[in-house]
Image 1 (cartoon, rainbow, N blue to C red):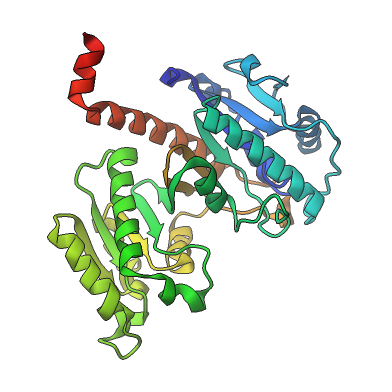
Image 2: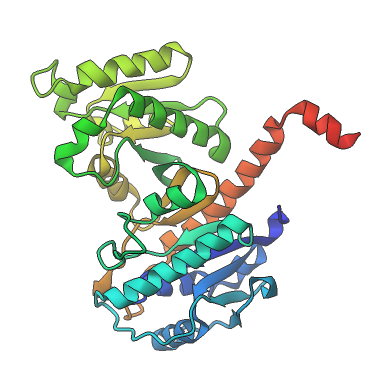
Length: 348
């Protein structure tokens, strides 16, 4: 493990025609960021320099071809490719999508080998990245395969944390995916993450209902009564502070979410619409459950403003902060929970 004050942050560049490169570079225009982490952008120094010039950004880049040549306190750009790229801001381009995946592959390899400590991913276009080499809905599923563990999309901002039972699943299929096994698995992942990644000793978790008004006693669907409620009761009887299901339509508006350390939504939009309403532009997407730490901003490629210098880097900067914080919390948790017999043996 590297010293905490020199945490290496790997950055996959995302869609070059979107705002990902802009928000990444703007994040490190603030020299104070380099005082507690060293970034490595996985792309091409020629491409990143071109984007920097186009946007009128003032920062120095350190191009490297060898990850062993990383310079602390510098914005390192690892040359993940050497070929040229035609950049057309705001345009969806499958060729540019291929370079986004080259960056992700290279950054993930470095993360797996320990050459970077955490990974922050800039936004990709889920359509133009599809190829024979990449057949995943997005970052999360790919990283789950590469890094090991079972992934959980966890949207976080200050004390607001929203996890999902199902994520990139069509709405018509949501109920079929939510099984007793899945509920127990996702609840356990949320609780484990709250303890390990956020230092919350006894987490209190709320679970939202699947159907409107949690089914209204079976009038609007039976899944809440037959699957969700009995499963949550089983979990509670074993000592975990897990409550619900709560009617999703009033849960956030009533500010009930403030009474819990995390909320688990049944499906993507049920959780992300209120989260982004409350925290858009400042929230972070954290992939819990993996063996390594990965975060990303809470927005997409934003083609409509790409290349105009208008992108707000706040969410990307928060993603860097959260990755570093979670990395430190996780290391501390591992030390505190390490087998005391092993610790004694190390001292002998």
